[in-house]
Length: 355
Image 1: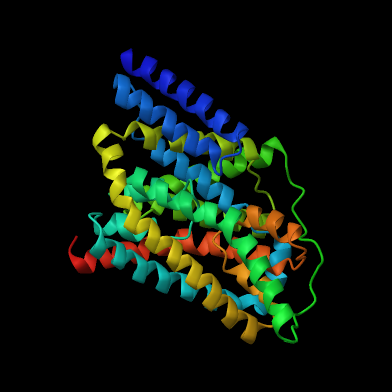
Image 2: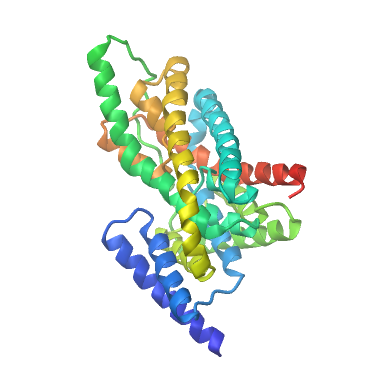
């Protein structure tokens, strides 16, 4: 009986703090607010409780949401964006490995936490997967949040300043393939498609967990819903469910935080510095490579390598006067491929290292 009361109290506190964080416009506010509120509840009163099955539910919902993010119209553009996609993903993998090992060497964090902290995936999804893999979920959440803040609030502004400065100082002729038409989004938004999507995601997510594959629940859910969406065009996840998953994720991570974890946050200064420098260098170097080899303008190329989400990038690029939809498609590809593949690579490294 106590567990039920503690669970309801945890969800109530997490929801209230999450909504408050959204109200004051904190990035990823629902998850961040829930983590802070529930962590405070746990540290002060030691009554926060979330069942272990929470991670399974969150991974299924998050996997379904990502699986729904790609549209049929995106498939037509894939042959023309394979090259920039390969460059972007290759650079992100190299960054993930180099920065992850640097964090491991220069900080007290263990190897799995170090590597998962730099995975350029979802800010609410990656910490949960990291926790399932044995990493320190709250620390991963802090560093993922910094990455998202960089991607949404810092890098776009710096890109505009740099691009304007370069335009004044040189006469570089910039070209790109004209593609400004809107993505054709699916209109299937019925409760039947919602139920079908969740059923498919749940069944294959559970199969993924049984399979023993790293982050199998998440990967299987993504692939199953992706097929449902692209082949049958009958997949739909409402945004409110994604928001619920963010609160659940925050509540779970917050319930694992103790006072010792708060005191250990001072050890994250070096890892955070490495992440900021690493993503900044990647944005500039990889952006320049894509600019020179793939026909994107300098601004577009650097936005492609910006560590934000696909939905965030849709808003950011429009605000910056960039209408090239390929940027959004590339960000969607990044979300699907990174969250499906990178945890497997991290797990392989851990296996080789004997961790």
